[in-house]
Length: 96
Image 1 (cartoon, rainbow, N blue to C red):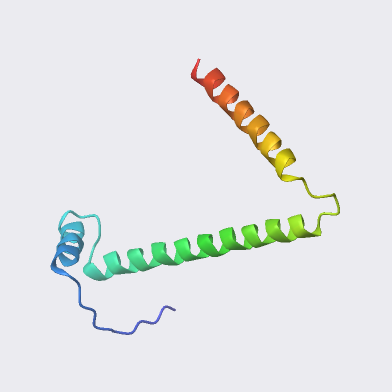
Image 2 (cartoon, rainbow, N blue to C red):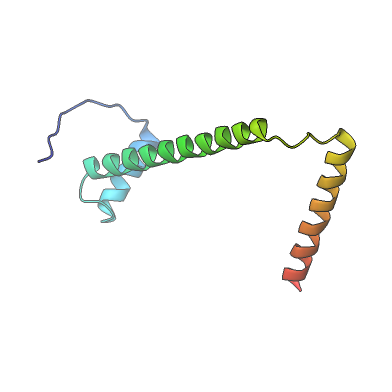
């Protein structure tokens, strides 16, 4: 069973008008529903951001743990140039 508690929030006029418009248009049943949805979406975005950060940390860790020798700056630039040319070729092929 869901429990609820009350809090008091103050919204800027523009935000409050948006909330009221969402209710009056029928998109939401109440102002509470608008706020609940906004908080739910914010929580989802935080979770996505946390997962994305974990992915970045994992990739960095994998890179640091990779036993293969590192590339020189010249090798890295050549590889990046090759990669970008390949991406450009794919893009122009898809546009054709």
